[in-house]
Length: 406
Image: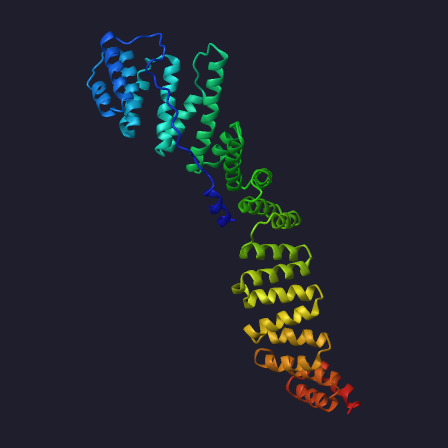
């Protein structure tokens, strides 16, 4: 899960678009003093020519006395500083403009929005959150439907910015709250919303919600392997192995390229759902696509699946491959060969397993195999030796039985 989650994080973008409403030329009920108005107009002309440093210098020299003039000029300076990539000075000036509470309500709201956007783009998440939260509960008088829609649009954007900020701060409950309130306008925004929502739900272990969100993402991006992985992970967390199995199959049909861990998980799911043949086949596909995975433990697992599926020849082959990795598996191979009446092969496998099994098991197996091969004298001799070394009812029964055969 952790790996899936690390992969998923790379898909999340927080955006850095700053939406400024340049105030030069805005209609204001309040007005600047004539002197300051001329300075602002001149600095605006310089700014339009790309002479930002000069424009800033003109305004920075002013010392207005009226609160409105101070707030207005600080706001313009804040914009210019931001355009000049001086975020620290921009923050200082915009904060000063807001603290004076001298601007018109709409301008005051927009100025705080500018400040919050700069904090956001500067990755100062806690500061951005503080101002965005205040903006959500604030408003300014709207006189037209257009203004009302603009305010609603801005607040909708704030929900997305807040979700992204809380995401970066790993405050998952708050992130989920705001991303759910965000209303996307297009396909890209819908996908962005679902991505952030999915991560939050996974982090909060809300598996059922995460399952639904992952399914929604698959509708938009069916070729993104990570959404299939998260869907299956959420279903497994809910003990829904049958659903997970279906979705693994659907992912494969979709053309999703499997990696080693995917093959292992899929084979385990088949095994848990009592479909050992499919489990073994998935493992065979894994071995073909990634030969390095053909380890002792994986071969043993595949052999076990083949045996459970009663695919005896394939099980024997898999046990044989496992035995080449470790001689202890010759014992499992010998028992399977005995079951399949391949007595001569079983005898050879038993000899190879001699050093890794109990001597009593080794000798008892030889009694059985000699008997099955018609070597009654050899079987009788082995039974007597077995009883001498490891007296048991079974050994005595063999001696009694074989006495009538020799």
